[in-house]
Image (tube, rainbow, N blue to C red; front, side):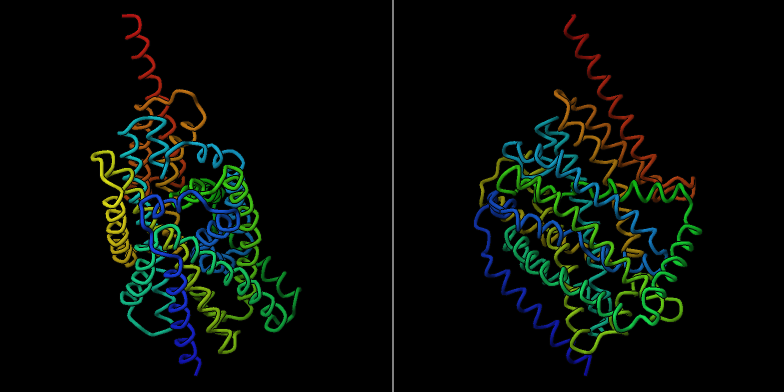
Length: 465
């Protein structure tokens, strides 16, 4: 009975979601596909931002980490909340004020040169595909538990439906469906926490405090200080203005909406992390035996919810995953069109729109294949964070703040930051206990300083000749 009801509810939800996306209207021009004509109000910017970052990592992954390491990850999640607020106050308004920008690559191209824009576009597309693979993996896990399908076919279903409405609707469809999905999970998962604490946690507050203490102690015992520092750095910097977030900043109606949307999303994220970590801690007294961290939330839902509640919460998990996935597919497609294709050829608007749609499908296919190689949700996110932060952030942040950014500094920083991150992450993963993001960020900053100095010296010599 529970399986039949779950299949019916999830199937109905996917039909309704598709209807909502269709009602959002297919994009008729590239400006609508990429930035929804820069007309997003505060409610949609905030809801879409929150729906995008509250993906499986910040729901399924954080519940699992709460189960394994208690309040440790709440402190780490606070770094992410602070990052959103700082971006809203200091960075997003500056980004929004740039004229004619569709992507981060556009912004970097304006501040440096076309070569920097192309390299930023390649990095953006690659990282969007990587993040999307993590979302696809999580979606496959959830659908497999509902329908009993092989993991690969579950991944195809999730990615296929998401790619369908994102391909035709672009950013507008993504934002509207995100707002629809946000309203579901922002209510139902906190409600689930209340029900678990009130009716399923034997011993009440005393048991919760005991489990929190035990899990937190175990988390600190198994995590070295340098690893904690690396995790804080990853959550503080690793998702800073990744392409979907940058697109929301650029698509907002005004600079104040851009600023306030990020600040509100940052405040919401901390509340969300508290709910997810609390669910993980509460699960320790309900779920018996050892369990993979990515399966804790599903097992908790199955153990505590009646059939109807179980089906509704499965819908919530699907919506969380799809709201992140659609944003990544759209952002990657826009970056490909704007930063990789357009710098080489002037294409008419209709052609750019078709290129963006084709890129959406290709990135979705890459994500579906890559999902099979993702180790775990948090593990996959940390790999993407490790590469994104050193590859893009020094160039972007410095470029927005100084008067004359040098192109050589941008090229060297992006290239060396990316190379060092990949080397430490994949080639020499055990060479040092220091998390890869730290030496990669250091190398990117040093490369930037070197490139800036070399070009400045060259300009001065040329002026004196």
